[in-house]
Image (tube, rainbow, N blue to C red; front, side, top):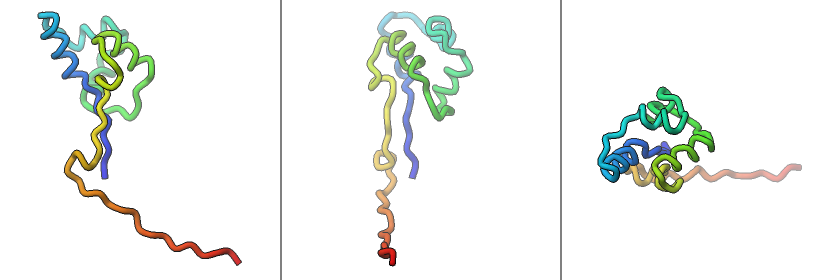
Length: 95
């Protein structure tokens, strides 16, 4: 069962471009936030296991958005996976 925390970098970049009538790119995000381009690509592609609080703050300030608009958690159930219950454990009292 997989769990996914998605960073909505592409969606927010598109929304900002539409709102400002300017085509923004990852290079613009890098320049304004100080987050390295390679890191931004990894965030975009879901290749990171952690995101630093200062990165969240910088991205929320840049777009501007709330944390919940930047990060989206998709549960396994939303991904069409079935819920699996853990097997029951039998406990034996110590003698």
